[in-house]
Image (tube, rainbow, N blue to C red; front, side, top):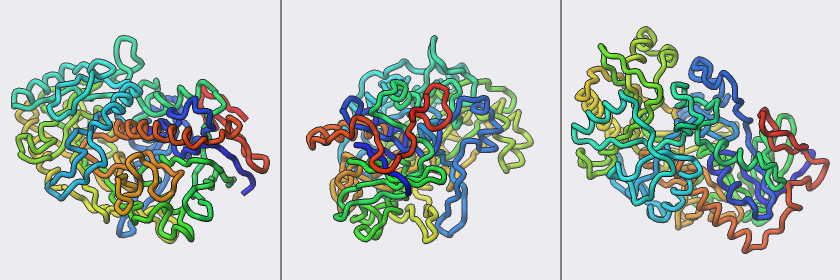
Length: 540
């Protein structure tokens, strides 16, 4: 370990949570260092190359995890500037008011949040503006009180509009899916390009890099530094164990320390828990900030199924089909009499994706299936079971123990929508369920709450145990709901960011010379963009 850096605020991870905290601290007179283990996702032809992305997994993390039985698997994880939002499909739904309460589902109880929907509503509005969300208020009976969306709803293409009419004729309430994408007369979006699961070559997605972090970095102000290729291996505390004093960081073959006044962890629900577990010490033998024993527990990632609905004698051409959602089965007030989950259109399935599947039928009939299908994503809530957890074994490997939950409700949801789609003119439905590696909506491993005995973080996402430690990714969620978590991560992170800024101002945090600096030794070179990016220039 050859050198030490110092920053007032050290942020681990550059996804929605980390980027939101950085934005919240702009103009506070504090130095902020964002440490990202990956690099920028280059704008390149391969962004939209289906074989490169979907089959050869060009941008996926090269990492192996292990399940509860010790079997290895490769998770669908991404380590890069902007986090997983670089690959999301843009769905930007708020949790519904019922999601903030404890509810009885088929598989068991959900957990209550430490505050109601109304507390997060103004932060949702800010998050929607930041992500540039299209939508229409008032269409979905399950949504909470809200104002208008920042941008008008995306227009249904003729095929999707026809599906919406036929579902409505069956008594359902289809609505325009809220989507964070730059569409419109002067929008950047190139309709027809791969989107869901692909990085956007023209920066049209409302992801964390494009909408939050990049605008800050382009100002090239000295208070903010992004350092890429930096894996935070552990956090170190003072003698009391009540304050983090440094992060131990590895960048290539170099290891160095980053000292700071406040540490914000935003590495994703799995890796944030792993970081605290790997930061075990004499004061914290079971993992940093783990007096509750809850670090790593209550892992959730939704029950997910793709349905390809086909009309065998009719092609269904669409260039951007992700504009429709249905929540009639979301709460117990729906036709099922119980909460099942949600349906939304997904990014268009392409023949190359089907050829890469192990199903011989899909491979052989890839073109006619893709030409005739309208594609849907079904989500059902994953329950916060304490034994569904992330651990680190003796060899330092990540182990994810995950027992499926609420499966009967998910099967019921799939069966009901298969019926609706057949009545809508799609007699063939191909059902494709996701496995243990489908962790895109990971959450819950460092849950927040008011009781330190049953939660890791307080309702502001500050550690109960370690006063200068905050966690602002989906780790904080005590329940997963049945919608995409991105908007909720951002809303809560903005809420936490305001709180953090107020606390630091009240504590009279002493700025570190206005910028990140070397505390000892020569200090490793700093940069706005340590990696490859055409707009951001290296600053040594």
